Image (cartoon, rainbow, N blue to C red; front, side):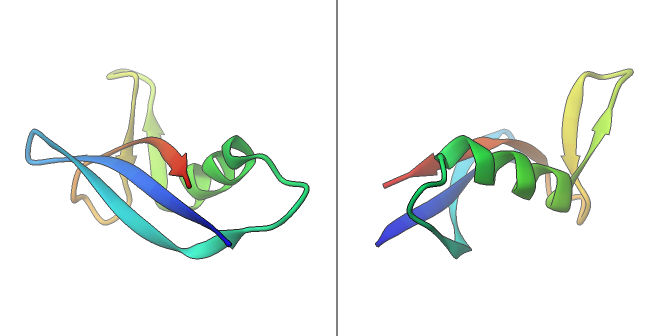
Length: 65
């Protein structure tokens, strides 16, 4: 079973947060990253960054293991 971690920037510190989904066979980790990014963050074009909807910090990506 593959775990999907979110890479977040919270209070100037990078944090790995385990997501509640597991990678299904046939899907690439980056596919889930795009889905989660759209779900959890809004893009600020002026600042060129993805800001988490709960205002905790920024979304940077995902890592799978």
